[in-house]
Length: 70
Image (cartoon, rainbow, N blue to C red):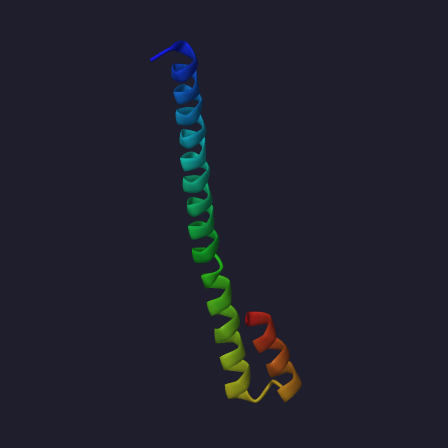
């Protein structure tokens, strides 16, 4: 294999390695972001359930809370 071919292969390996690292970083960030919002969502749902049970929320407030959660 000549020097140009080796250089081309080295460049391809470098680009592919960078692409795999970028993919792995994206997956890691996405997984974290998808998992992370669950506690606040659960808290909002529980707060809404308490307010509804106690009769402290008007239908408009319930709808607004529901939309915020979704």
